[in-house]
Image (tube, rainbow, N blue to C red; front, side):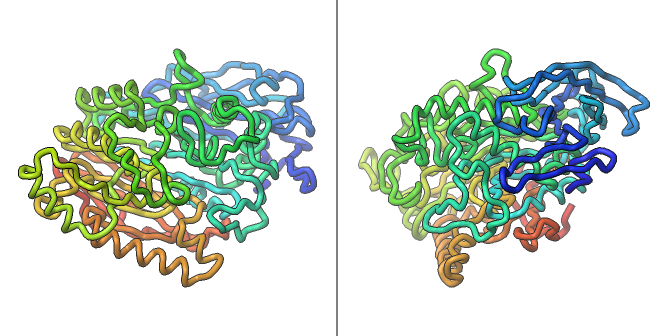
Length: 547
C-alpha cells in the first residue's frame, strides 16, 4: 500500500486515532485517476494534501498551484499536453483537468507535480475514433462497502487491458460505523467507516470519499483505467428518490441540502465531466466508442418518484403503484433523451449503464401469467389483480415505464443493459412480454447484473448470523426464479466480484468474475460463468470459453 500511495518509496503515516492520513513526503496520498474518455479528451484527477491537518473535509489548507503533464510514454519524455491549475479548500483540494486535443484510441500517461513532489503515474485511454470497429472491452463494477470487504475486485481489474471501467453506483456508503442493516452488521471490524457517524454534511461526505480513496486496490484500478461513473443511492442515502430517502430521518436536517452536499463531494472526488449547462444536477450522459458502442449512463435517483409501499426496505409489495403509468424513475426529459437517442443511433450496440435491475422479477409460477396473456383479448378492460412484487426499489416498482422502454427497444436489435445494485450475479433476457415469454421466448434486450465489489447479498449477510438462514433464503429465491421468471438464465446469490464485457461487430460477451474471499485484500478471482449474445438475437446464451 505504501508503494501505491507514494512516489519513489515516499513514506506515509496513518494516524489510527484520528483516522486521517498525513504525509511526510508526498502530498498525493489519494492517488490519481482519469475518466469520461472521449476520442479527443479525458478528465484527469488528483487531490493535494497541502499539510498534515488538511485532511479531506477539514476545510483548511492554503491554495496550491499544480502542474499536470500528459505523455505518450511513462517516462514523460514525449509530452503531448501540460498545464497548471490551482486548487484549494473550496474543492477539498481536489483537482480535475479536462485534457483536450488527444488522439483517439490511444494510451496516455499522466501525472501531477506540486510542493516539490510528483504524483504516482496514471495510465488512461481515449475513446476509439468514430469510424473504428475495433473491439471494445469494459470492466463493470458497483457496490463497494468499505466495512464488508476488501476491494480485491479493483486489483484484478487493474491487471487487465480495458477501454474503461464502468462504475454503476454505490462508490461509497453513507452508513455509520458498524451499521446494522436489516438486522445484520459487518463482521469485518478492521475497516470501520470514517466519520464514525452517518454522512450528512459536505464535510462528512468529503471525509468518507477520502477514506475510500486511501484503499490501495482502489488506487491501483484508478491509476490503470479511465472510469465512467454514475451515482446510485448510497452516494447520498439508502433508497433515495427525488424528494427523500429511506435512510433520511427528521433529525437529519433538510434533505435537499444533504443531496447537494453529497453530489458536490461526489463531483469533487470522481473524474466526472459535469454538464456545463447543469453541473450540479445532470449527470446522465452518452459516450461513443467507434461504430460499435453507444453507452448511455443513466441517473435513476434524481428524478424518480417515491418507491411503492413495501413491507421492509423495498421488499414485498402489493401496492398498485407498481403499475401506475404516470410514475417515473427516469423523468420525462431523461427518458425522451434515452429513447430518442437509442432510436437514432447507428452504433451496433446500445449499452445502458443502469443502476438497478431492469428484468421483471415475478413471484410465483409463470403459468398463470401465460394464461392471463392468452385471455387478454377476451378480458377487455377487466382489471386484473396486481401480483405481489418482491422488490420495488428497482424497475419492478416502475413497471409501466419499464414496459415503455422495452417497447422502444423492440426495433433496436442490440440493446445490452449493464446493472449493479443487488450484490448478486444475474444474466437475463428482457422479455418482450413477460406474460407470453414461455410461449414465444421473444426478448427485446439482454441484461448482465454484476456482483458487488464487497457489499453483501441478503444471503451472505444472513449467513453471518446463522448459516442455514442465508442458504434457505437463496434456495427460495432460486426456486421462485425457476418458476416465475424463466427469462433469468443465470443467478448466483453469494459471491462478490465484477464483470468484464467485450463487444465486437458480431457479439457481446460477458465474463462474471467471482472472488475467492472478499475479506482478503489479495484474494484470487475466477471466471464463474460466461454468456454471449449474437448480434440481432437479443438473447443470452451460455458459452464455455472465457475471454
